[in-house]
Amino acid sequence: MLMSEPSKIEALPARERILLTAYRLFYRHGIRATGVDRVIAEAKVTKVTFYRHFPSKNQLVFEFLDYRHRRWMDWFSQSLATHGGNLAALVPTLREWLGDADYRGCAFINSLGELGTTVPEIADITRRHKQEMNRSIAGLLPDPRSRKAAEKAAIIGMAVDGAIVGAQYAKPAETVLNRLQALLDKL
Amino acid sequence: MLMSEPSKIEALPARERILLTAYRLFYRHGIRATGVDRVIAEAKVTKVTFYRHFPSKNQLVFEFLDYRHRRWMDWFSQSLATHGGNLAALVPTLREWLGDADYRGCAFINSLGELGTTVPEIADITRRHKQEMNRSIAGLLPDPRSRKAAEKAAIIGMAVDGAIVGAQYAKPAETVLNRLQALLDKL
DNA sequence: GTCGATGTAGACAGATCTGTCTACACTGTA
DNA sequence: TACAGTGTAGACAGATCTGTCTACATCGAC
Image (cartoon, rainbow over all chains, first blue to last red; front, side, top):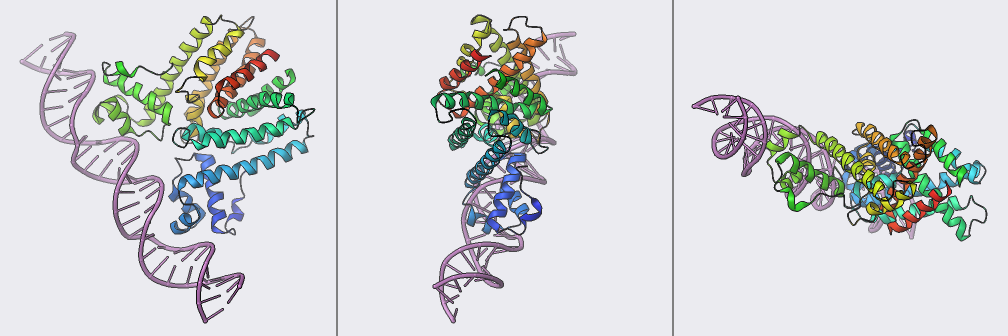
C-alpha cells in the first residue's frame, strides 16, 4: 500500500532509485541492519553516485523519513477523505495500513527506538510528523481549528500511536482496530 | 529508577555484571549500536567468560528482555499498589517512569522496531510482556477477572503504549501524562 | 588431592560497515 | 563546441562486529 512499485524503479533516475530502495529496506529491516552497500546494490548504482547524492548514510536516513512523512500524510489525508472525512473515517483508514502484509509499524517510532540516542534529530522529526498527523485528525472533528479539537486530536493521536505499535506485536490487526474503535466510541 | 546501581556491579559475579551492563547499554543506545565488545569491556569480563554464559548476542538480547520484563513488572505492580491500587494509580505510576532522565521508552517496543524482522521472536516476547501489563491494569478495575475488565484493560493498555511512545518524542512527559489522564477520565 | 566451575588476556578469522578515490563515458544545454 | 551534471566499476582504507581459540589460575566441594 505505501510501498513503491519495484517494477518501475529501474526507469527512474539514480537518486530516486536510491531513495526508494532505502525506503523499502529501512522500513522492512531497520536502519542499522541495512548497510549502504546493500542499498547501493539493490538500487543498481555505484558508490560514487550514491555519495554524490547522499553525503552520508545519516543524510539518507533523514531523507527517507522526510519522504516517508510526505507519502504517509498524502495517503492519510486522502484515505480519510475517501472514508467520509469525519471521525468515523479514522479506523477504516487505519485498517488499510495496519492490515497490510508488509506492515512494520511507524517508520518514525521504529527509527526513534533504534537510533533515538545516537541521532537525536529523530525525536524532533518524529514530533513534527505526529503533530501533522494530529492536525489531520483534528480536521475530522467539529470546529477543527478550535483548542478543544486540538486537545481531543492529541488524545486520539496518542491512542492511534498505541494501535500502531500494538499491530506490530499483536495479530490480527483487526483486534487492535476494534479496540481503537471501542475507545473512540467512548470519547 | 529502573536502572541498576553502577556502584555495586563490580561485586557481582561475571554473569550478573554482563546482564546488567547489557541491560543498561541496550536500553540506552539500542541493540545493534551496542557491540559485544563494548558489553564485555564495560562488564569487565573476558570474551571466554562472556561466551561461556551467553552463547550468542541474540541469546543475550533474549535474556535482557526477560530481565527487563521481570524488573518492570515488579516495579509496575508495586508502584500501582503504592498509589492506591485502583485506576487512579495508573498515571502517577507512569509519571515515575516517563519523567525519568534516562527514559528511553519501552525496551520491547524499541527492540521490536529495531529488530522485528531480523529476530521474529521479539514480537512474541513483546506480546507476552504487554499481556501481563494489561493483566496488572485489569487488576485496577472493578471485577478484575471479568471479560469486561479484560477488554477495558486492553483499551487502556493501548493508550498506555501510545503514551510511552509519545513521551519519547514529545517533551515534557507531563503533557503526555495529562493527555492520558484526560482519556482515562472519559472511559 | 582432584575436579568442576568460573574466571583471565588477548590473538585471530571472517565478515560487515562507511566513506574516499581514480579515470572515464554519456547527455543535454547554452 | 564546451561544459556541467550524472553516471559508471570497483579498489582501498580504516573501523567495527561476532564468535573461536589457546593456555593458564583460582576456588570450593567432595
